[in-house]
Length: 490
Image (cartoon, rainbow, N blue to C red):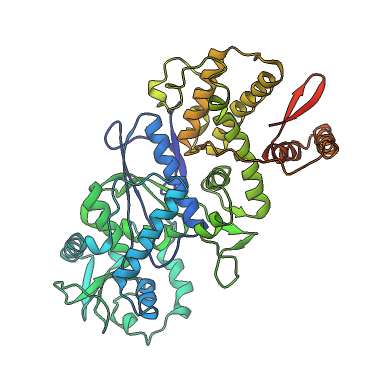
């Protein structure tokens, strides 16, 4: 069961081989901290969080670095509007970032370098580029000479001659920055200080770094010349990641990353998310509406990570129903373990696959599926199978006082579900006892059961599950058997 990944650089799926056996150096291009994180950030952070968890699950030692871009025109503009400072704005939204990610169950990275804390490394890299003929100063600015790097465009597949044809009518030749460049494609490594803006002293005068050089320097400072995985959103392939490669590899002569992985974008009701369209949704807005964070994780994981994903009310409702099913399975041990004679002191902690005590067909199927380019949607089918089987056995236990499957086998199934859910960052908490019965009469419950039966007969299993989950949420448990469906109030 070899792990294979789709590499944006080579445009094909390849076996995963690390620079150092058993160890993974992974860098994720993080957020620019000028506002609250939105659904696009949620998807990216969940995807790379689960990738890291899975790599650890199959036995790798992972060093995971995620940066913060804490100097940027957008940050400076916000500071100006708020009569604040760049540092104050950045600190506020970094704090908000950690709050939002904690709610989503995102594990913290091993380190969060900030651009403003990496100034020595940034200037050192620019100086090396200048010495090697890949950069040139111009009136306090420093630019990267794109045409000097023969491999430019290899990540995005773009050719300079093709871009030149489309760019000529979009260039403002009166722009002072354009006039400083030797070539229209050259980009800024260092920007001369402007009045009222933060600046750092440098060999080229007071100024601040360009965006692209920041990540090249942070990768090199924290992880070295060549890393295993460089991850980020598909919108970063060009120009950001393309420019990172040009900067880093021109200096080191080595590949910046063995594998370039990119997650797809998030749409809202089929439209690109934007404030102008009024469909811009932050993570905290969504969670404050009452959407379960685990349902958000499930929504993200039901799509292949490289494909676009469409956020709709129907999609989040389906994810919520799916989470109810998995949650019911995860809480099986707390609900029935004592009655089945389990030792609950063990068995509710995820176990790495390399330490699993016996061959386990569920673990093997999960790994075989996910090893195909992090196929988390396929892996979820194994979780749903386990959860539904545990739910069925729980119904039998409640109704008949015993289970069809032995307690020992049920404990292993539950332990497996807890383990695999932990790999995906899905965790169920026992809720405080509340009166969930909203007063449905027996006749209303029977009508719901009839609707569910009709849905099952037409093979509309999504609707069948929705009705069952709706009743379960109101404190009514359904018990399916060969003789039909019975129910009881919890």
